[in-house]
Length: 259
Length: 116
Image (cartoon, rainbow over all chains, first blue to last red; front, side, top):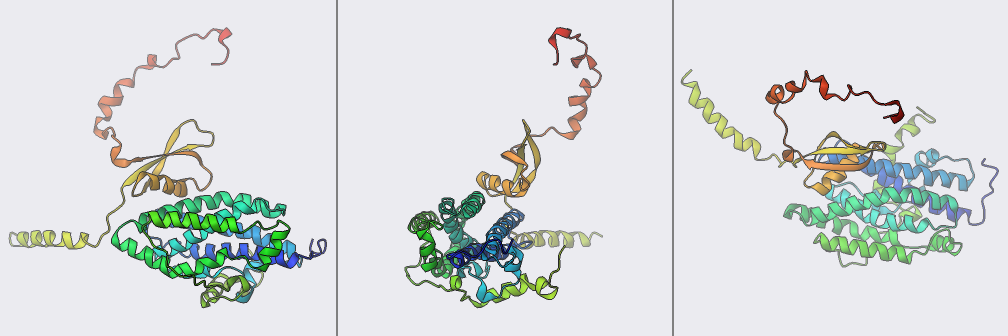
């Protein structure tokens, strides 16, 4: 299998892009899974675990395809469990700590609001495998966004305490959202062949949805153009190392261990 | 014994508010009904807590349809259900016990009718 498909010219761009999609899902999924057994209510606990499982499932598709594209015989598991932090391509937003429930929720909402329009746009990708993964994932993510948007409004426009926590979460996470919306040269090159769609409409949809939700939630986005970036180039915050230490422990300590 | 009485009473009345004060208000209880893939009826599957109907449906989706069980969800506030009391079981149900003629098994169905 590995030898059948020589990496094409745009192979490394495509590989990079697939890692970004997969790593975003993997790291955010892992963060959500850390709430298992700790959420404020049983119903929330299960809802968060469902989200985590959806994201880990999507990771398998993205990283599986990344491994195929790379053509070196690496599986989704190899990519998830045997890469070091600087090889991860997720945005900094998803590796930020869970904090309180409001912080976890705001992080998920800001991500979902990008994830859904991005996936919907990717259903029109000229790469059929990408279009198929996007199609399947978009259904799950539509529910994620419905749930997180609803909860952001409820808690933002809730009690003084819940409002304070949601506004604090927004102030903290806002600078990290920008990285999701940036299109660098990798995305631009893949855009020329229609593998990755035009990013401007994705940004506009994100902006519209987030603005409307924050308005209903009586929350105010910070007036700062500052963007915390680096994750998509492999320059991460200190948090990712701790995540990997926990997530990769088993495969590192017992290489090749299987069920 | 008589000297214990006022003491216990004071302790009870004093302890109740301080113990319940830090407790958070529970969300109301909702009963969940799901119509399955092949089912014609909604069936009671369990209950959950949620602050309102919309979130009750969302929570029901997450708690009770994780394995693709349903195509439709009903939720109803548990307090809105009026149930028959167990003590009324006799008067309500016993009279139907010995009336086999209420079952439609005493009619001869003509062969021409076919499968009913």
